Amino acid sequence: MEDKKKDHYWIKSGFINIIQNFSGVFFGFASFYVLVRVLSKNDFGVWTLFMSTFTILEAIRSGLIQNALIKFISSSDKEHHKDITTASFAISGVVSLISVAAIFIFAPFLSKLWNSPQLTSLLYFYTVIYLFSGAQAQFNAVEQANLRYNGIFIAGLIKQASFFCFILICYIFSFEVKLIYLVWVQMFSALVAMLIAFSFVRHNLALSIQLSRSWVNKLFGYGKYAFGTLISSLLSNTIDQMMLGAMLSPAASGAFNIAVRITNLIDIPGNAIATIVFPQSAKRMEVDGTSAVKYLYEKSVGTTLALVLPVVIFLYLFSGIVITTIAGEKYNDSIPLLQVTLLYCLLIPYGRQFGNILDSIGKTRLTFLVVLGTASLNLILNYFFIGRLGVMGAAYATLCSNLIGFTVAQIILKREINVNLLNTFVYAYKFYPEFLNKYIKPYWEKKSLRN
Image (cartoon, rainbow, N blue to C red; front, side, top):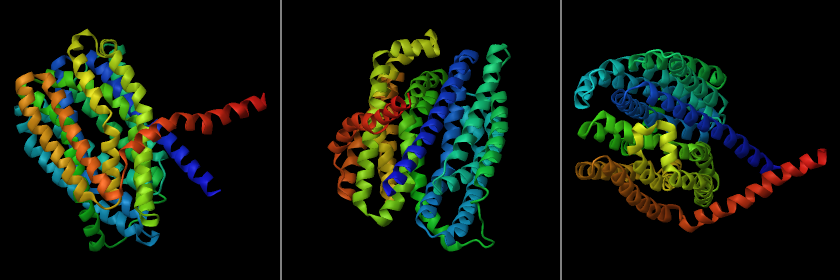
């Protein structure tokens, strides 16, 4: 009976999170598909740089707060939940105010660095979105900590679908699309998403009257390394686009972003599995120790590999057709970029679960140091490779830094929880027959009996 409950949790949670990640990538991809047709190459490049900045600023807050809130609510007695949530909201408020101040200070500098005058006004308006999305992130974290995902899915779906619908209408009816219009629509979408997220979590959202310094210190002590890890990871993933914008042009950054957008499709199963594994790993570490965490890592990575490998092979073989179909012939220079980025996509499942597992067992400082080292190496390699090879240099630099980061991570996991790299391939190989025998065959057998 207990096994059935566990299977039900994993199946239901996995399904919701895969649908959530699929819808997120779908609408992000569909929006990109329309934007490359309604924006000039330069405007699309500016939008890419804006979104890269947007992503990093969101990560500053979520990295410092979200994982810490989820971990402590998942592994603490219910009587402490009020204090934990209140402390998390307090930290979030302070971080949001500091980030908003930083945006107003540095927006003109970034506009000048990337030779994009309109970027200043985009970032100023973004501060409103930042406040709405901060509240939504808090609500989502409380829901995830309680092992529920419906509100996260619906809020994210509405937020992304509304933005896509706007640009699709503009495309169909040939309305002029200015970048500032896109930010205004995002502002409205963020407000709606925040209200939806609150409606799903309000019954579990209990706050205490007094702020607990003890929990503030615990959350911040844990979150500061998770924050550093996430920021370093995002910088590692976006520094190539930012440096292309600074060293070459916004158009070069846009061309590289197209390859990245396509490979984001491969992140769907990995993101879904990571969302489920993190709270489960925190719980199992408390009860079963490192052996259970070792199994979670190997199994989750193997499952993700089994899901992404066919997609990687398909995209590599038909990269030319994919780029031309999606972005048009004016972006043919993205074809070789896509082929290189696909190679390090196979390393993403390892890196994502590495951070998840180490964070869940309290080794956030170690995760931070590894990711910071990888990001720093990526920055250095990008500088030299872009200077010598142009746009392709960014792809090669990221590939090299990911390979080195992967090697270091596996050595650490072997030492900390005795992970066996070969087991990930075994689980990947076993995934197909297991899925067939456990889910597909019973379904068809029941269907045939009914008929």
